[in-house]
Length: 105
Image 1 (cartoon, one colour):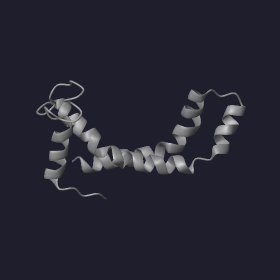
Image 2: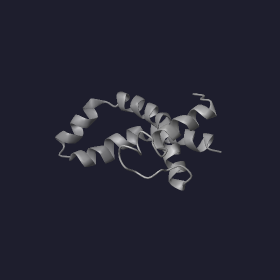
Image 3: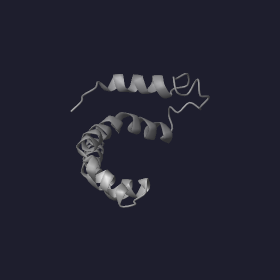
Image 4: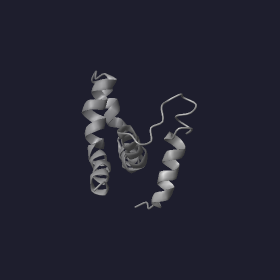
């Protein structure tokens, strides 16, 4: 598990999403601090690595032959994603989502 000092997280999120932040200043977006959107964006920013790492591991374990067989049977890319890739990655996605539910209490 990754542990960050709370002041470091707050400082980095203010640096990114504050009034003169890297993402709000150049893009002309409004200052997000003190709003519900700030909370949503902060949660997404903080918990994304906890979801992405298990997903990358699951995608690396995906057998390319399954994708080739589905394509050879006439499945379009969207159907291959929905019927082959997502069921294989679902445990990793749930594991990443479980981190969010467990740690946000």
